[in-house]
Amino acid sequence: TILVIGANGQIGTALLPRLQALYGTDSVIGADLRQPAQKSGIFELLDATKADALAELVQRYGVTQIYHLAAVLSAKGETDPLGAWNLNMQTLLNVLEVARIHQVRKLFVPSSIAAFGEHAPKFETPQTASLDPATVYGISKVAAENWSLYYHKRYGLDVRSLRYPGLISYQSMPGGGTTDYAVAIFHAAVQGQPFECFLAEDTLLPMMYMDDALRATLELMEAPENRISVRTSYNLAGMSFTPAELTASIQTYFPDFTTRYVPDFRQAIADSWPRTIDDTVARNDWGWQPEFDLPRMTQEMITQLSTIYQPSIPTF
Ligand code: VAH
Image 1 (cartoon, protein in one colour):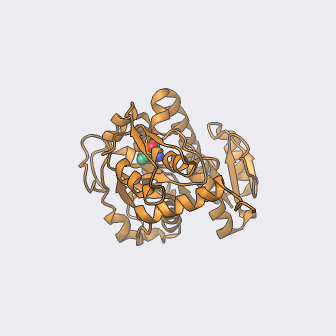
Image 2 (cartoon, protein in one colour):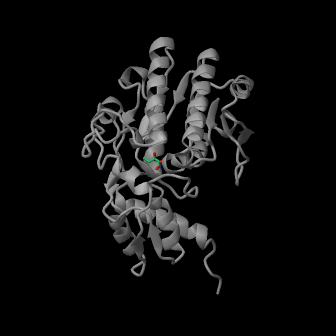
Image 3 (cartoon, protein in one colour):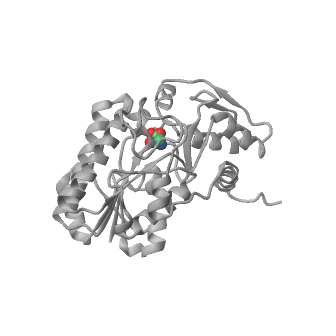
């Protein structure tokens, strides 16, 4: 069985149904601090900072794979650095230890472009670059990458990881990320409202549509173990765009839509991150290939959110 920790998060909300479709609802357990809005399949309340609660769940369901998707993201983490560090690291160490003790076969531990800092090349950031992250979230990701590598080398744990770009999805509301302007903007556009962006209009960032991120995750997890050459975390690229480019893409659907740019503390976080990512190693090792560019993502996000905000076609 597969355990998804942080099942109510941005990735968890989208990944859970994908795993249920692939492996059957009875083989997938969603777990988070609170019940989900819409419950489907097996769901367990879990505080993953409690190792014994996690171990009990793993034993009770005979868990063989864990997706560890619980974390405090970059912007929210800066409002409570030690709280973010404690949650991100305690849960990770519990997952690694419980997996080691209970012979969990495979683990997914996400990283992020937030792992890169000011001394990594900004363009085509390579797989091996110096990692001096500017945020507590980034520091916790670099630590997670190194702990994952350690548990792989010392205990043979099959831990796999991706340095996700900013992820855009319609299945959940933005949750404290610096790239979450790119989610909130669609909610405003579809509701006919102007948008106030907390990043400057020319802030170029690596981004990815959630469908690509989920496919990358599943392709990585299903790749033969001898194909995996990176046990810290793989660079992964989808596309890169600026708030101005995203606004223009949305305006092809909503010509009157406008964005105002009011940069706040999140601008410094975004400025510390890469502009574009080199994911050659992921392409060579397990055949990664993105499918969503900006126009296709815009069309998909607007289509999906339009049905959520205007569910029924008006009856005449
Ligand atoms: C964040 N969405 O903004 C996350 C991600 C690269 C961005 O780590 O914190």
